[in-house]
Length: 240
Ligand code: 4FL
Image (cartoon, protein in one colour):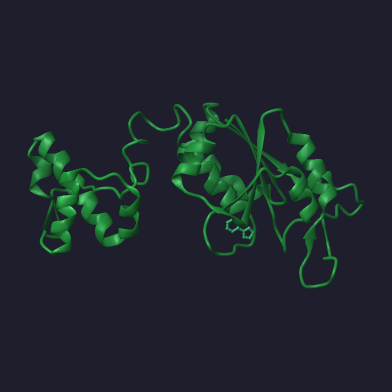
């Protein structure tokens, strides 16, 4: 998977050299190219923005400069994504869908935004990462790269993708590690029983309980077994 990022602030992407994503880049499982939009300004002062037509505050990124940067990275099979509060909010299904692409071009806006004409000309899809405003699209672009890269073959160790929260539609079960007693609190006994079938049942119930209390709205979008439904009914009667 190749990511091309178009940004005025390539130095903001340094964190992607760390941890799992950093390793995936080093192992060439993914490629992340940062293109500084400013390099494509033909102006002698490297101007990239200008005042908005019609008046108003702030500056707008110039369409011609963004377009030149796009032409530099564009490819046959690239999908162009604009990180924007006006896009659909990213979710795990969209992440999985995007992970099947070969080449993503991610456009990051700054200031008051980008001239609408170049957005209309090059962008395939606008994506938001949540209902809040940031100073630019760079952090959202990193969120997108991180979440999508996890689904690229080899990036995660075997087994850790599918079994997690959201890909199953509900939250995860709680995790415990040594010491066995922390501040007088014991690890749940079942986890030391060695009885994997019972452990799995217990974990499933914990996951359901977690979801029921913390994110009940998620339960509307999942297929539940009859046993799960019975357990949730018990919870709603406020048993354990
Ligand atoms: C982009 C916010 C995607 C949330 C300012 C410029 C943004 C954003 N998701 N805020 N871009």
